[in-house]
Length: 322
Image 1 (spheres, helix red, strand yellow):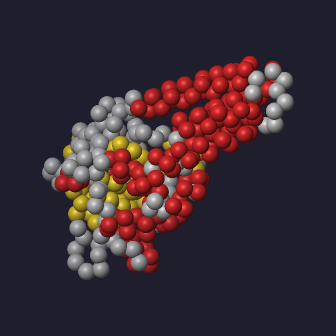
Image 2: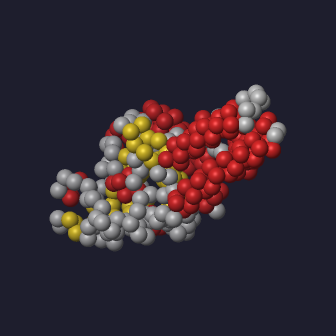
Image 3: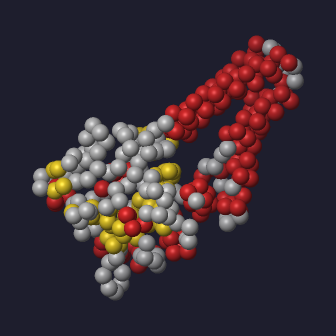
């Protein structure tokens, strides 16, 4: 009985709902009844999907919408600056390239500075820019300063700053759209069975009983390479973390397969839970693995991290829940 939902402790398993996981209705909830099994609302405040990240799935590739928008705005800035350079016959050396590089460097440096306590846990992570971590406000400021210094003349410099400001407003509008989306709450009656230890019976994780302190849920699978890479860090963090409960929920695999993987890797099963039908992934709209959900004391999902997560990123997100 790996995935259960109470109040009546009903089992949500494929065999119990006639071979299919129930689909959401037009209100963003599970139907009130399917077959002979009562199914409870998953807790949407109103119709919508998981927040705050939107993921675009292209075959096996999952892309974060915010990153695609950011890349599009950078390309638009380069196009606008190219027109300004030709319009004002600017002879400065590569002002567009210099401003973009300065903006990226400032955005990264600003992010690391703001979260310096987290980066102190793993200082080398400050150089791992491919894992993300940027503050757009520092980036805009850095790009603007370099624009003024390289373009020099009032006309092209003013036009460049105007283009930078307009694109910044578009980015702010995009972020505000994401802030207006409905929050998602996990059902407080959700019960997950833990991975079976070497001796004794498996424990049960009752989501409702975890309410009152921050909760981190990582969705993973043994076949997923980034999941395998982050598992040693996550199992150690789950054991040592005192600010939040960390639960690592396997998606769609058999207990024996999970136990064999944990033994082979020498990983502690204490904070591992099972979800053989992938129900939790469907509930939360997680379209790729690994996905990490950061849930506040009231049970509301506040942040979603799609893809491999580092110790620094984990610490930053947990701090945001405090």
